[in-house]
View 1 (cartoon, rainbow, N blue to C red):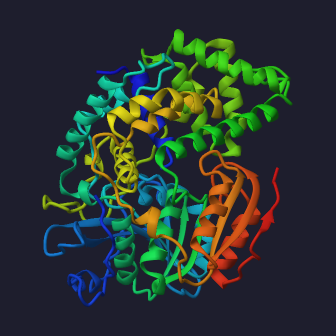
View 2 (cartoon, one colour):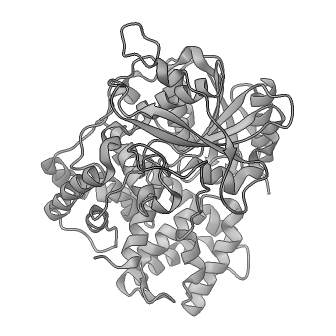
Length: 522
């Protein structure tokens, strides 16, 4: 079994990774399977169980088929939550917070204040996607440790022949299939998008109004392609790529995180208390040396484990998602450098939240909501890998991986001397799993919908700004781009300007001009 610091490094690696479903069939297609019983349901809302929840937050569930091609087979329930409109309601706005693998119900419970302005006109609704949280959560069981070992990004160079790691990943894929049950072959964005349409109808809305972040933008784009006539006011913030393979996404992510780190160090070195002095250039070199030193000689923690350089890389990657965390990160790094105290930086890689109970306790029926305490501890990384692999059709052979690994390692290190090795694990993520759908890469383009707003942030460490413009071009004339010149992952929570423009569009239909911008905010 791997040490705890290896487990933390793995979980951070797959959490930061950006990113078999078949071709979609329309819900009401005359020649398709009969889905009417799923479209005839209404959600029964009741008070959520749990502590410290937003006032009036309600929970419910909606039932969807496991396999849309065979709707008379098994079903699963999706956990949902809402905060009711305080003003005149025009229906619901559905939120997806990204991941993939993040449970929306818990996110809304912990971050509802950001969205209270939308309750002037909407019920604010979210959900745990299929395979996530309480909605038939996937897991890799004992295979989790095999994945961790195979994808361990510690700084020692791997052998040019990764045969052992690939065999571990193949074994882990089999363990994931055994531990996850029938939902795993039907996970992925194409089916999650169809679930969105069932939810839309169960909410009583003729069109889906939607706010998606990060991975949630991929989900929104797929919905717009599958259901253009039912696409209402759409906002995609922190826009994901629809075309790049996982290997290229990893390089883009490493480059974005390095840019964010450079910006942080420029800010940090303006302060006399910065752990790396007052010269930004030498500070960058000091960070690389610190990571290497900790990989060679990890330091003990208060929990009896040891903290490596890759643990530090994962923690910094999480902290760089929001500029608001920079002062706390600076203090944590000072404690680490000056006193060897890992507690501050470890907080960035050990976060989490509890899931509120959803209505009555779950029963024993297959596909029913699971109890909060029964959600597997590895659900987030297991779901992230499962969805990204279901969405990606590329499966390089062992021979291709071996031939390309040295070149990829060089490219990743060039993209980031700090995050490159860490993100290289993404290349191996889907080995041993079935090929994913080609639909997203080949078919999601030139959508025939009403105008939708795409928000790209210049300093985003996870979804580079060019993905916003590339995705807008793919989606066609419906896409309107808002250029946020700030820092951090997504703009809605960090920029008052973005927040205002998004709310104005969703509430009143007021759309900014294509290419307009929001300036930096201090």
